[in-house]
Structures are given as C-alpha cells and as structure tokens.
Image 1 (tube, rainbow, N blue to C red):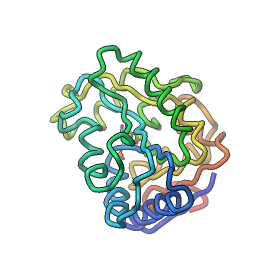
Image 2 (image 1 turned 135 degrees about the horizontal axis):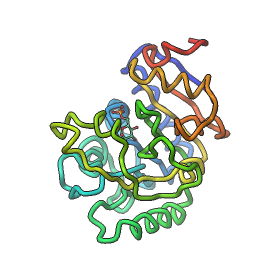
Image 3 (image 1 turned 120 degrees about the vertical axis):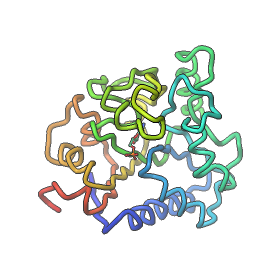
Length: 240
Ligand code: GLP
C-alpha cells in the first residue's frame, strides 16, 4: 500500500482528478469504479472542469440505496447525475449503477456483476471509507468473498448518513453493493480520505491486522492500492 499525504481537501481533490486524467490518457476505454459520499465531490468537480474525454469510458458505481426511486434526491443515481454524469461526455450507456428500482434485487446484483465482467472489470477504482471501516456498503463482519449483494446497513451507517434524510430513521435500511470480492478484483485502487473522522480507520488499515471487523483492512492484500489522504485523516498514523 502506498500513501500520499496532502495538505488539505482541495489538494486531495486535485490529486485524485489527476489520477482520472492520467488513466483516461493512457487508456481512453477505461472502466472506472466510482464512489459516492462527500469525499469524492471535489474530485468530480475538478475532473469535470478539466474537460476530460470520457467518450469511450465506462463507470461502475460501488453501491446504491434500496427502497428509493432513482430520481429520489438522495439516491446515488441522482448524486452521480448531479456531480459528474451531467457534466462530462460519458455516453448514457457507459453509466452503470445498481438499479434500485429493479423488481428483483438479487437478480439485479447478478446482472450488475455480469455487466462489469462483460466490460472487462475495473481498471481503476476509487474508494471512500466509512467511519466504521466500511468500503462501499460492506459493513463490519461482511465475508471477504462476497460479490455484488443486498445488504442491511449497520446502525452506525444509518447515523453517519442521516443528515440529508433528516434523521437516521429515514435512511433506507438496505442497499445494493459490490462485494469485497468484486472490489479486490479492480486492477488498481485509489482510496480517498479527508478529515479527522477518518483517522482511526486509516490507523487500523496501516497499523492493525487485516480483519473483517474493519472491512477496509482487506486492502492490505491488494497488489496496487494508493491512499490519497489529507493531514487530518493521516493525523493518527505513526509515519505521518
Ligand atoms: C457511504 C458510501 C461509501 C462511502 C462512505 C463515506 O456510506 N456507501 O461508499 O465511502 O459513505 O462517505 P463520506 O465520503 O461522505 O465520508
């Protein structure tokens, strides 16, 4: 695992967008894996402002709430439309996200895995970190061999994601998520973390054992993963 510690969120966003730019230059038909959450918003803003050519690319989102319509303002589909898809030249058929309106959620998970395989797998996957150590919506305790699946959200996630829903009781209780098995097959992974709230998880990843209790610690076993983190997120690391 490699780590780049940058000064602040603006630098993190710039460095992450530069990774997208370099990847698209090297391989115009790149398959990107993409996260939602507050952390990647700056990266998306920067990438959109750079006027990059996504015309041959495809994006696959990590996860989506179950129980919302795609057009619900807090769906991850709406998030992607607002922060990236509407601002770049990625064709509609290149936009992939688990469909929260599918009548059979399990069948949708199988379809999503098959679509990712048919696209050739992810060349570059960006990940955020949950404060409880989750990656995508793989909550603590999730077995490491899972593929895309339906999951129950942890109480800690309902609380962490409550603000835009006006309280934890309004957050959807389930989600569709790539599994850790799916995530670990990405050829390259870049993890973004900003702020002191992520410092304990980063410490667990870099200084603790690999354990399903902290899903992100699986990244210790990936051959090509780079962390781009700001000083606050790195503040508990011995090497920082
Ligand atoms: C959500 C998403 C994760 C994301 C995490 C962190 O729960 N499912 O993919 O990494 O939040 O979000 P934030 O970047 O807002 O801290």
